[in-house]
Length: 264
Image (cartoon, rainbow, N blue to C red; front, side, top):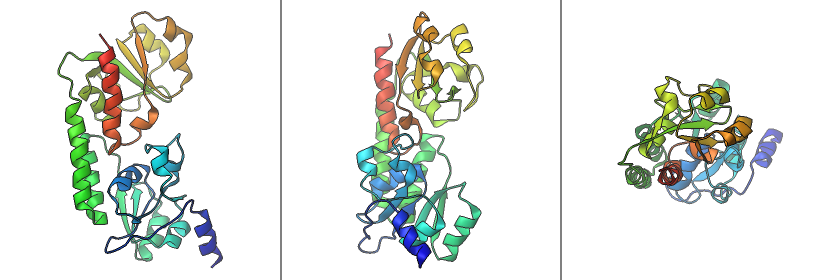
């Protein structure tokens, strides 16, 4: 009983139960949080991951995330909420998964969506798992239409998307696909750099692209040498737009397309 009480206290925010036949859901996956917030029936989503309540780690808008309780992800917290379904990532601790499944809770584990298609599949999978196929189909349609609306028909601009830690987006990553869709050709991919490869400032300056898009507050991004380099157009992108796919895709494309329109 003590563990149960402590677990309830650890859940941040109000918890309301869904009405009707919808299975109740707790999400431990920050990317699933954003999808479930859009497709879940009122009261169905009992809690989102604690990441979504942290503006530095969330892909959700703060005011939207605040509408849901959050959980730190321990088995005790989740069991106290007694959901029918838990959505986690593929890295969920085996002991946590075992405890949830032994309690009769269905665990749905999602990987990282590295393409539009994979992201849409995740939306549909969550719709099926939570009894919200129609809402999921509607959200998938909105994302797909947003993708098509941002298709760039002209010549691509040579660019580097430089992320926190000095890493770049490689081929096969969603961030790379977002750049292509909005009118950029990735210089890092052309150099053979894979997803998450480190790109030092010296290499950027030695063979500069037309455009550098930085996402984060890495020291190299604001280095005086960057400001002094001629021929480089420097733009910023909110890192939260790159954490996940799903509903974040249209917002990421909005910003990237806005940048592309400013590039001659």
